[in-house]
Length: 124
Picture (tube, rainbow, N blue to C red):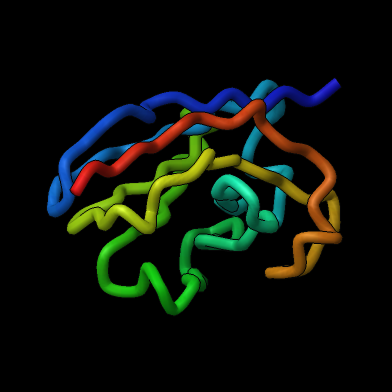
């Protein structure tokens, strides 16, 4: 049973920053792609950012490009999401996810393991 545990969410004012962490019970190096998704109330879950095994390939949703940064430390079995210049529309539950597929994927359907989520609330 693979477990992903997110931490670091909270309440922040618009323009502020938050850093999220995701610790895994299995070596992160075994996951070719890891990702952060988010889901706002009444909306579908959407991709925020993805990162490949080495960290050399990353992708971001257009809405967060230039403000968010995904990173991974395979030695610590942890994935990170640094969020800067936060906006009220970034308010959502943020989920860490990992896929067993041994290729780079940005498709939500390919993700096999999910964390329980951490709430991020940005006040205006």
